[in-house]
Image 1 (cartoon, one colour):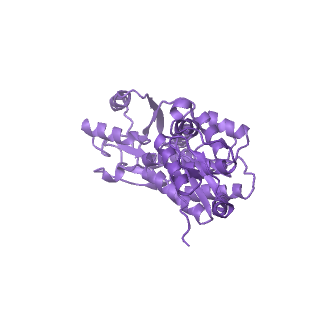
Image 2 (image 1 turned 45 degrees about the vertical axis):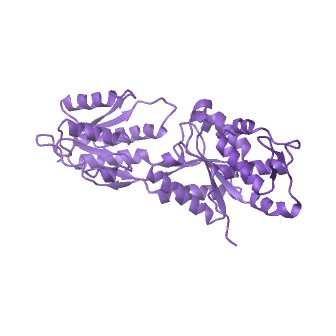
Image 3 (image 1 turned 120 degrees about the vertical axis):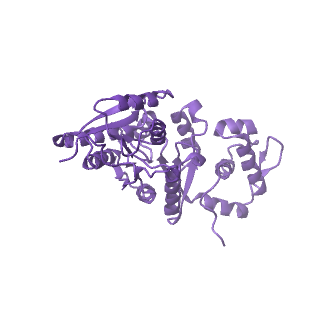
Length: 373
């Protein structure tokens, strides 16, 4: 007999949730209206209707227009359903919709799904959905009440959500960096060591004047950027005996802010000859420099802190860092299995180090700049 798929659609997840509440006799006089279910579950009308049609086909519900009465099947029919409900499940809250994930994150999620499936555990994906309107924390609270997952993985989280999960002692694992002062287990990319390493690569290529271009974001967002900044500045200080200097250059979300910063850096004397940039701004910087007739890397060298799906299509291969999706998936999966085994995880954030790709955008500084001794 073929095994049921472990990767289920949202409509199927809603159907599983409704079936559990129907079998618990939560609505003895009939289900709420489709609109009521839509508002309570935070999903679209199409998803609700697809879930209800699925339950009608299984004999759990009797058709009844927009308002349906629950029908409890006989014991012999409900036994297989109850067996499926006892399967272990792990919830995964994504920062964005699965269709909007880049290739690296998609590969990581797929590797994690396969890692857990081999251990008979289902990975149930949830995107933020309407969270921008109601807030991430209220949205996750609703998800947590609706689903009885034995563990949760969070990639879409802010300080408020992380602090609440810590205070409530929830079985949560962070799939991104934790904010300062938050004691939750997790797996993060080693941005601090990555940026420290990037400084070393630029200095060894002969560069003395460095710049790190970062977006100026609220303190509640992107703890990885703070780690990146610290690693960059530590790297510059570590190579100070060779005459290395560097500054973190911030730009706002205003569309003209980054181009203006690029122009200022090019006009500065001495000009920073090697720039560290994070995605998705790397391509913007690259295009702007090419528009101005700046040769790369002959006049300015560029290093990207991350990798991007668009990089293979560029005429010049970026010097960048590539995060191995399998490594992060294994760490997340192993921590999830420890939670499922009843273990209380220590508040340690494990680090996955991206791999250095030399590329073609990092070269020697232009003639006349200070060279390495």
